[in-house]
Length: 131
Image 1 (cartoon, rainbow, N blue to C red):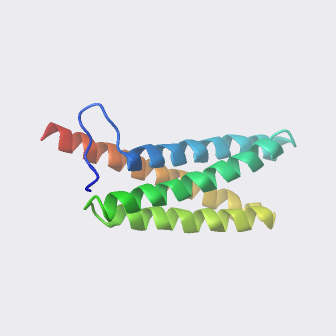
Image 2 (image 1 turned 135 degrees about the horizontal axis):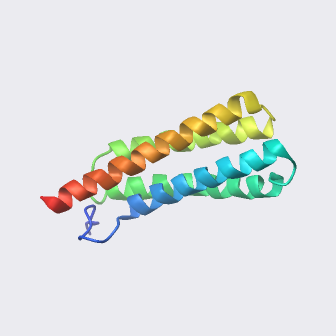
Image 3 (image 1 turned 180 degrees about the vertical axis):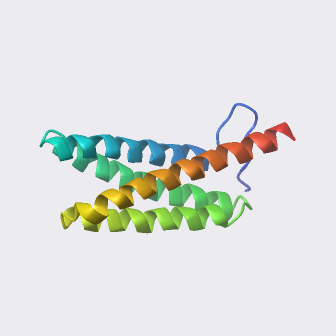
């Protein structure tokens, strides 16, 4: 059974929702990181958010693989999603090791990349819907 990878107008695909959730989780992490760096208030929120962000990265891999293999889509999103999961794993290691000199810049890079992937996904879908 084939999975529809291009949505009907006004609908979103599973990969779009997954990358949007990942981007939102990364944004939440940046907010709680700022709270954490300015005091201890954000520690519990940043810890909980890290688990959500890691889960969102795994969901993005699942969505990308499902859109690629059974759906007949491109393999590129699956490679991007796998890269995000690797970066997320590095973030966890750096965070647990209390290495903010590497953890913070990597988080900024991850957020920027996630926004770029989300924008490209939305732009591709709008182009397909207009055609």
